[in-house]
Image (tube, rainbow, N blue to C red; front, side):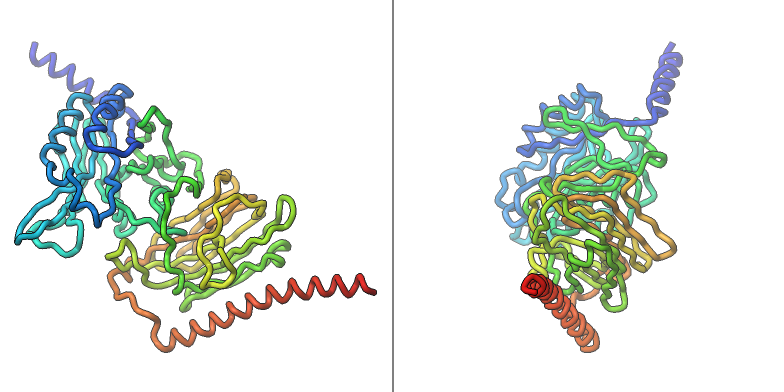
Length: 454
């Protein structure tokens, strides 16, 4: 009799594991850990298999004063009990305060609780790179589930700092230092899932590989049914992010970029431009128009190949080709422009660059307009990567952000004397481009005036 019951249970387990999809959930409201308990129960009633709780929202500098840091064990017990009662996996990012050498040290931990409330995976990092205690970071982990899926367990900055492992599903929680135009949280997460074609369940959204965001709202929980093997045969959907979804984010320092102003007059007919930075060249083709009266808008064509800061403590290698809206034409004032809609319509943008052995992420930011799948194309031929879009409205950023891991951890320094000379030449070229575009407008107005006088 015992054998029969065990056999039936085994068969049921195999049947459950053989399902092609699983249900993921994300809590979308922020609060104290105790406030998530009813949401964990709600997710259980919605048959969610794995639920991700929000990451702490307090600034890192203020975390030592947060009371939650002092009751870490109590928080773990609270989540464990809720996971067991709701019978689902729960992933949480908690901050633990430890003390040694008369100083406090904060440790970040990603914890995974199974349906019985057991902690089945832990991924830890000191909050800062300067540790007073013996706390050491653990290796990036993975964990298996009873619904037949193995997940990689990451903290959010790992999306930028590390290459993806050979898995189809990832869970990501933790703090993120957003920057525009390329490294805002939901923007880069969707691009990361797209380029690696993997499922990404994170505290800022659920992304189904290169088929885009997959989530439906249920009160304060978003859920999605995901293919366990990724979305290998689905329609490719461009990873477009609405700028209104982004929180207030600082702008990246663009002083090391080579940025040429987009020639609006020439682009209405379609024109090509090549922008290079230290031998890395980006080829642009832009054709644009206006749905209504012509507006005063500014866009920059940008190229970058080098080392840049990320997350305050890391230097990362990157290669970038992009078109993005500028608050002004010249590079020193070229920051992300207005988030309001315009009547600019890009009939076509094509960007091609010869990237090194890196992984490239398409970055697309709009003020709310969608881009149809058939209007988007990303292709790679050897190291040459081409990104194209047609009939796109209200674009703020469109480009390729490439990671060059071979340059990571190198010192962030200004160019040497030879590169300085090249940069000066580039900046003089940019200045002449700026003056020429402005002069052309004056000449056209003067010509019209002369013709009218005749």
